[in-house]
Length: 75
Image (tube, rainbow, N blue to C red; front, side, top):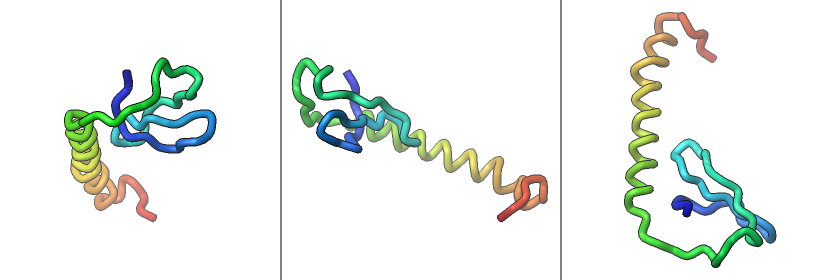
């Protein structure tokens, strides 16, 4: 069972975005035992929000000081 945002829905397959940074799975309709259904996925939204907050914190703590110090060349 996968929980996440559906995207890239087509005639043959759709994608389930299970992580904040876009990781997920591609699922073909023929492989499903039953059709997808809407469920309250509060935990998934909180998990993806925490992942995005961690990513932003990483950039602020590590990348920006290195760029300001000249270790990483800025664009």
